[in-house]
Amino acid sequence: MNKISVIIPTLNEEDCIGRLLRHLKMNSSKDIIAEFIIVDGGSNDATTEIVSNIEDTILLYSKKGRAVQMNVGAEHATGNILYFLHADSFPPMDFDALIAAEVGKGNPAGCFKMKFDRAHWWLKLASWFTKFHWRACRGGDQSQFITKELFEELGCFDERFMVYEDNDLINKLYARNQFVVIQKWLTTSARRYSANGIWKLQYHFWTIYIKKWFGASAEELHRYYLKNIA
Image (cartoon, rainbow, N blue to C red; front, side, top):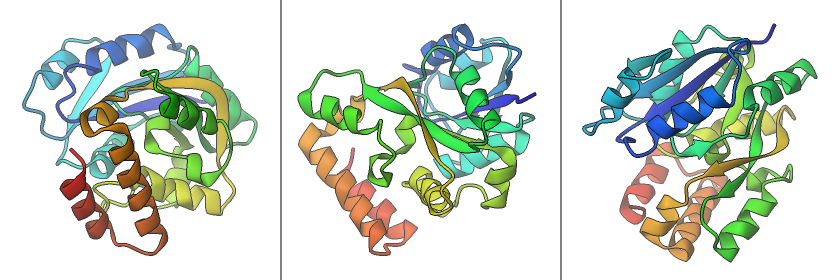
């Protein structure tokens, strides 16, 4: 039977992590979930305290960087399916059964379509596009499931990437035609758009995507992110 290890990297997520874990537990089955793994990258707020007080949750620590943190979680996972989730992204009801069903049908990796928690017309339009299989419509906020066997075969997350780590793995999966979009809505926070401005942030995200397309290194992408995105 397929078992899912949910892996969530955190860094100062006290506003989200408690709500997310309660949401996950209410919308999944113990028959399918192997464990919930939180990998903290050095929070200096109440994130780890909140996680420590939630039953049946594994708290791990690593150096900062989502790629590193998610790899640490994968190393400790006992499930045969890994589900990587951002701390501000809330998957649909029965997300675990939906993922297990896709793997059972022979789809070893994929994500959900995604909508934002803010009613701006551009964010609604961007959300609508995530239902399509087009590579340009993918991103880590949509969450990502992948069998542990395939994840290890692809070399896990490339830890050189401090940003764009999700997309790097997704590129490898698309190159092998091993990615599916589950047609159920995941809801993610628009907080970065609120902090940076919608058009400014979208421009910088597109720039990062294009830079990577033309061969920019992981270090160059990280420098650009630190310079331009709050």
